[in-house]
Amino acid sequence: MTHSMTAAGLTDKQTKQMYMDLEIPDGKTQVMYVWIDGSGQNLRCKTRTMDFTPKAAEECPEWNFDGSSTGQAEGSNSDVFLKPVTLFRDPFRRGEHKLLLCETLKYNRKPTATNKRLTCQAVMQAAQSHHPWFGIEQEYTLQDRDYHPFGWPKGGYPKPQGPFYCGVGADKVFGRDVVEAHYRACLYAGVKICGTNAEVMPGQWEFQVGPCEGIDMGDHLWMARFILHRVAEDFGVIVTLDPKPMTGDWNGAGAHTNYSTEAMRAEGGIKAIQDAIEKMSKKHQEHIKEYDPNGGRDNERRLTGLHETSSINDFSSGVANRGSSIRIPRHVSLVFPGYTVIVLALLLLLSA
Image (cartoon, rainbow, N blue to C red; front, side):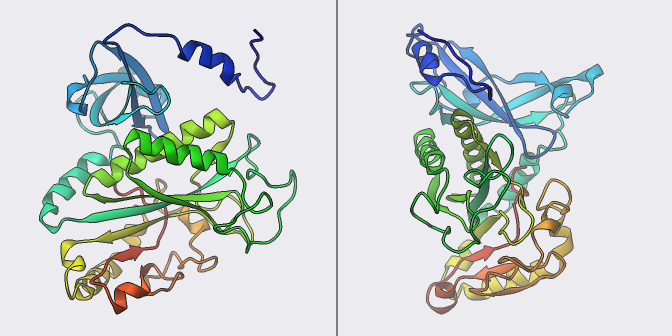
């Protein structure tokens, strides 16, 4: 048997499968701990063996890692704790093996700077009686290993935008294998993924997670992101969530957030929607700073008022208006009690 590694650093998956088919001792489970690193956007992982099969995150022991290598601690005091929070099935090892989403805690048990989940959980518990529902539409761009968009001519550009959104055909969509594999892997894992589609820029895609209530939204979105990166790794493709990976006349990528409370979903809910929009309008700049890990600077490249975006400096709302900060779908304003779509940017406020 030939054991090979390509010039690009890609290993032979068939060779790997020979080992993955090996039986493991009864009662042994591999649990991959997953966490957000000091960038607030990249994910890290490592695996430990357990002598039982955990059924919930609470059954898994805390662990730790070298935070000085992830931007989360100094070398002189480098141990960072991993606190298990949500357990998923592992679509890569399968069987009884698990993926485990974790919070990160400093030596003094306080959250690290990029552990936003702890404060988010407190907010969600305070708002529990409102039954907040979330559905997030995560856009992303596939890239080749040279960071050029996947499927684009090397050193050049494809034809102008127009035929690519929800497109079909080898000249209109690039990377569908990654998308389909990710969708199925999320379903297997128990992630609440509810859809996917090709986006406006070629090589750009979107998946949707939800509806989820409360903290589940952040947990399921982050695990869906992890699985996406991990699937793309197997295909030798890179995933970027950058808001504007290509300058020029190309759409950027965001994470449009569908949101409603029980009052918004009730009869006459449009009034509750309008009241919420009014409150948000008064804190626009404060919110913008929370919508990306760099205080809004990343989204300045995308939120220009062009390419179906609102200007980052202006707050706006409208019915079926894709150029507004908040978009109320047409059918909500006319017929149904309602939900509102916050159309701003990559939302990391939930659980960054």
